[in-house]
Length: 248
Image 1 (tube, rainbow, N blue to C red):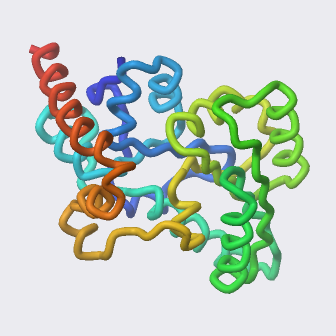
Image 2: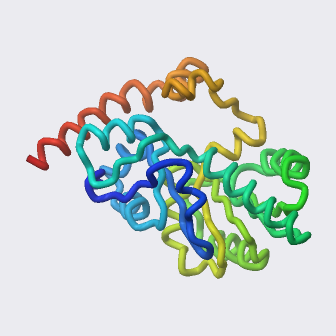
């Protein structure tokens, strides 16, 4: 079981600038992933033992405040925020040194990855974008894992993005952390691949600023999202209350 009392969560967006260089695993947590982690031990371990964890949802911020947890994030730091910060920082370094570091995208479909390459060429012209689309299946075979790891390690990335949706992306990255022969920040950012590619639409700023991005997604994708947000939000409240009672 995952407990918010034991997690160290990044306090705010500004703290992204203070992250150390080198090999660093950055995960995010929201109400849905918190719920899933109550029943998935490996996922809970991956979130708890990664190097950096951000609150990708106002629900986590409010829950930490309600529970008076040691970590008190003051704002939501979404996967999108991590992505834009890291890509912008690497682009600035590359421009200053006139180099072309590698940003590697592992996950999603070839079509989405092509759109990412096209947009990144305009947004981050100093970065070399390398991509890998893994097989679309619930679990990778040992041969799949070897192919993915070989592709990533051969590219020697300066930034690595993993986009396979939670909890698969966190569990895979955590399980193969020692096999990744890299020295850079690694972010598990799921839906950001689609947002950046333009194949999925992010909520307008008003919805984001009022902590209603979940409602926007529910209204625009009801068939896909109703279970996550209607049942899932009720389950999240139940789990938080259970944490509160257990702490007494």
